Length: 253
Image (tube, rainbow, N blue to C red; front, side, top):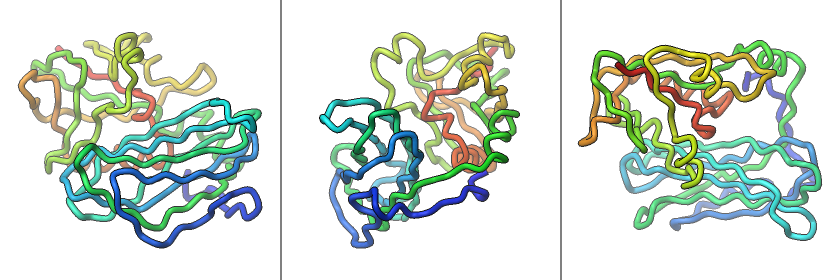
């Protein structure tokens, strides 16, 4: 779907369009203007000095009076160390929105470098919206770990065979963690479990199903999947970031 997006640079609405000079710190922050109802793609190239550093992209939206309206967060584990990786997230400006601040952060003690920061306005054509409506994009992840004696956990993780951290739910709030958790569990795909990966009632459930190869960790609550399945997940996130919405289900014994 992303290949069919008509993307154009907004020249009048943004405080900052492109930053090509590189920087280095544990946090990178920029503010830009919004048009209510419009969609924007915010992207940057980042690398860190640590393997599988969980970099967090946060976007905070405010109105003309500086009042907070909404935020969105995207967590990515960077391949590395010292390998450039492109990170992007889509922001939709709600009614009354005037400006947004995007913040990219790395864990404490991790050195982060960035360049090629871009803000672009994104328009979806009717064909793209139809794909979403028909459920032809993935809306969530199902990890089939049956037969491995996987244990339920508060912070289950998904790793690739080569050791890349694919999912950890690091940006979850304590309240959400207590109420819903970063994943759901079940022996079969019941209607309740499917609702976990359904964005809303107007969108069909379309899960990306992967098979766990082994369990890992002292609590035996994390899994290893194949490198090809890990890449399929990362590719799917370019269209719809279901991991940022914790749309994850583990099938267990």
